[in-house]
Length: 367
Image (tube, one colour):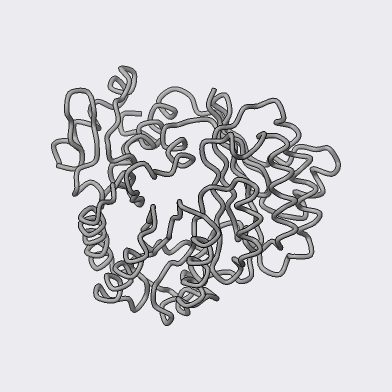
């Protein structure tokens, strides 16, 4: 059974204005105890074969070079040499990614970096609450290339407060000029509990759509494959770990707030760092939530995940039986297209994907 491994590093220098992830500034003193707890939790999976590894956060690059070495060493004890894995990704923020850390990651066998740029423009970065500048990013990006990283993703956000179509496209052109292997472009979501939400920030949905439409056209013209709603890759450079998620594959999550999906059961660890450390050190399970989807709910989730992939998805006979009416409705309204038994989002459906996905989430219309 193919299994992915996700490791959550919940530490960050500063919380961004849009971020609702499990990430916490000012907790760096807990990093050594956290890594020790991670090693104990990881040992529970020592007999499992992993194909991909993703180190996310938070900000993994906030760890010192020595701490990154410790992290890679403890993970290699359950995965085997990173060089034997199909893909090993580490997220990084420009202000904390140093040549020394890059050397550690490269030597350990990390073969893919995902760099959080978010905007090309310094004034927009300040609006987001980011603590790096474009100059910081360029320095880190070129250092990564010098260190030998040949597979780099760059994250961008569309629809920022005060952002114009012209500024967004200028930023996209700047990123393209660097010729990364992968670009992820996300429309800004205002999540409850974030500073943007508290300030009442609103998104111009029409302007955001124009940005995302132009992203599709310009990146495809530049040779990128638009293979998932928010993700673009040069041929052969699709994110394998994330694709495994969209194909409803199994994965193990280690660390605070990390989720696992094994044998049809989804579980999630406590998001509280201190509680996670305490539970693991006491030999207790850190899981605070679990569910097992069955029947129509499980089929609907598989459909939803499969439709995120722009190449299309072939539903099983049971999926057609459960959701044939909903699939036909979205074919009729132009959000889905069907060729033989394969269905996929249309170009219009890309921008109204949530409207499609709601059809496959309980409560169901005919329930």
